[in-house]
Length: 263
Image (cartoon, rainbow, N blue to C red):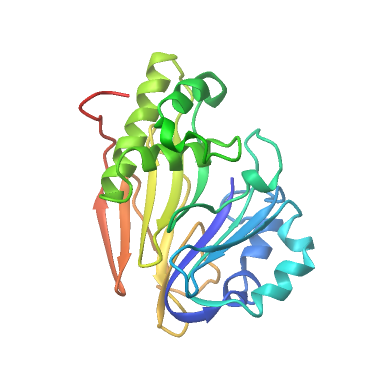
């Protein structure tokens, strides 16, 4: 499973997430403690500067073996940061398949898998509105889920878009009689807030935590803790959506939803 970290708060350098912690994201790419995987199928970082759209830097090298990542991490400083190391669930290792994904001012990253993706991929692609179909660059279930959210009102109500996109996935899986579960933790931002989801159709989603940064100036949402500080990290319960806005953290129950006109 992939590993990722999202940060919102006072501006920090990216290296404080990917390089310097005891269990930094680069260390997690070599050996995730809670995912029991090596995440060497590419990486990506995203941040917001003076423009409304995020900047992205992605490559197919393992994060631990990319000197450019180490260098830019010491120079990129931002109030909203995403970082992701990838373990492929079957799709190719390419820049287009590396997270985060961006559309307009929105940025998205994901850990997990849509069960039976090869059997439902066509139906899911057809569920993306034609106006957005040409925006899809890769072949992952992660990017496709992001554009299902964009199809279902991401810019107006991102929490509702999460629920509707999940509902589309579950409906397509049911039609295809897929028994493999749909599991995900995912993070979404527009540069001002973070929404993070922990969900699985079988009640067994990947791990997800939140906590304050070491200096207390920001909030982290992450696949697994970056240190062993007692009491610093709080697990997000399965089937819950977390919202980080203006320094406050709210966690609420999550349920997939069905659009009035179906898939």
